[in-house]
Length: 60
Image (cartoon, rainbow, N blue to C red; front, side, top):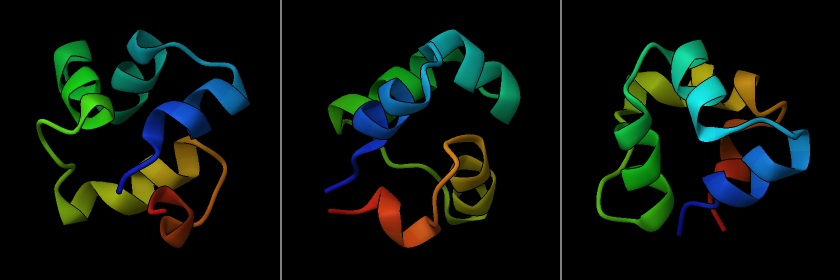
């Protein structure tokens, strides 16, 4: 489904760094990565920018 962890590790940032860039809690990023929660649609462009990818790259 969502491959945030893989993309985050590829750009070499931590969950904390990503959470600070997106202004969300680190636990939110952890939930996105383990699949227990999904990012809101309005966060997808910002998430893609932080991970240096396209929105479509976030999904397998």
